[in-house]
Length: 372
Image (tube, rainbow, N blue to C red; front, side):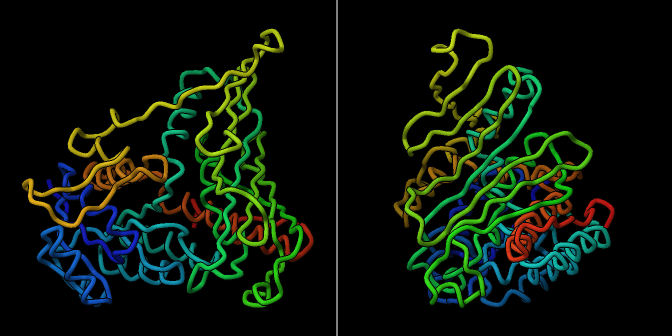
């Protein structure tokens, strides 16, 4: 069985074309982009005949089995809902939506349509996350006691909807790993804003905070997690970090890019507790034709030089893992990870965390999306 995939949005979305083209259970069937010149350039480069510059036309095509949405954030919810209601499976880049109500709507649309939804959260398929997951599943961490994550970057000069964006409105890169490792469901969140960004940025979204830091309490668990985000007016090299503290071993992210993370092992002599580790690649988990995309590779059809796209070196090698999970879940008729309810939970943590910060740290309860 081969699934006909349509990719919507060809900026970041073009990164995924060669992966779908080489996946043994996928057919890279169609692309969609409003800019016709760009649509044709990419279609020609990758040899994709079916091209649309209108999203509704993609959904009207009965040959399309699944759409992979890479459009701007404000379009995610509307396009996901339209696709599910048109009987298409949906993969969508983060975040799922911009309101809790939209998240609930997508979860319900999944149940009504019987179609799969997967939020393409890169961090839970990064080699670092897969490494920590392996340690956890082997019992090497012991009992997990606490989780922590951050996502800090300087977004000055970014276009469109990014200027002044509330930090927690784009929080899935740090919420995903702390919830995802033990498949926990966030129950409630409390968040504080700290500092202020420039007035011309703050007034765009009525969001003054330079940093937002949140505590997440998990349902039916003794665990909580701490996440923090900054986007403007904070001096920090780009960092997406994820840390886990167990009673046997703990994993801490490196402070500076290109350094090594540290494993702390309990009950050793104090100087021997920390040890720098090299995180391995996890290409072996993938079908052979797409293994190359966990590090880097340039698609070159039939040895003819086309446009070259460097693949997967960023985002911790996650892109082929996400594609494989999405395709496999449909073929095997199982829930992908993260599924609609999990994606809604992770996205809503950030939405409600910002709301909490505006209310001085008030506890905000999340809906139970699994029962929606």
